[in-house]
Image 1 (cartoon, helix red, strand yellow):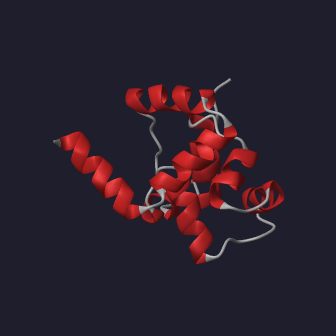
Image 2 (cartoon, helix red, strand yellow):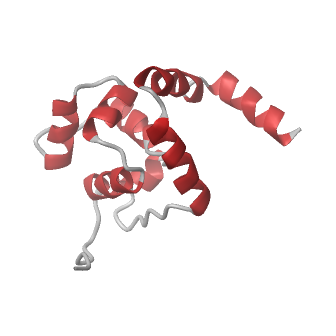
Image 3 (cartoon, one colour):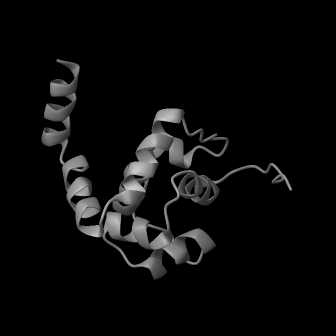
Length: 118
């Protein structure tokens, strides 16, 4: 059964992106340093994240803050993202934590991008 299209808010975009990434609430919570319960409250509208946590959510979901917040945002997973997602699922929790630290460090990420481009 196809999903009914509806006007999206950031919670809908967050939920759809999590589904595309095969990311659980626990994995997202671990990535941004909050509890699974808080992620659940965000998704169900019982709590609103701080700007700091909104930025962390967007980053963890591979989106810009603007993409997360746009009400008409369409989130499309590309083929290369799918391959990365499968790799991510095979990582241990420790490896995911290490990778998260690397990705969230702008200097390391910049250096990594430069070495790939070279």
